[in-house]
Image (cartoon, rainbow, N blue to C red; front, side):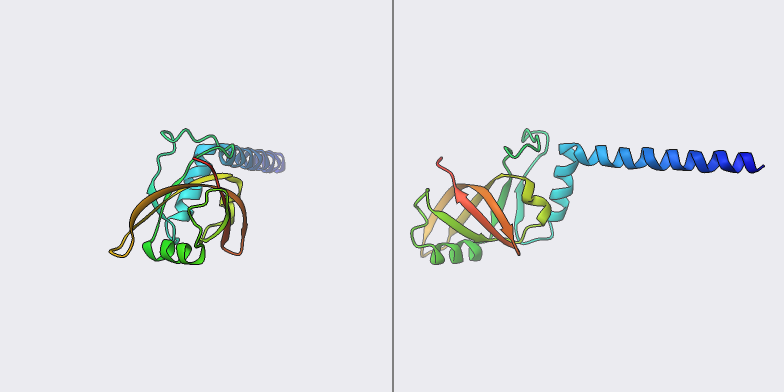
Length: 144
């Protein structure tokens, strides 16, 4: 009987180790990591505009594009605080709530829309994430 209990304990340890390996390898899969990031993004200020993991050619190597819509109020504040916002080589700071887990993604594409009566324009900007610090997303524009 004691021998049987020892075997069960040994198998429990082996099963636990296999489960840990399985979970870890799952988190290494870029498709799974992307879906985790997306689920964390949805309740935050940045609204998911369009994103399909497989169609976006997601590799998890920092070269992937993400598409998010930023509210009109956010882009208006952004432009007011950055008068020379059309200068593509300028370093900009854009306040967006993002999870720390997003840090490993090096490139992100943000599409800004503002069609208010005062300023009618629609513009696309590409940004490279530099760093995240307490919810402040430091970005650098990329030539398009």
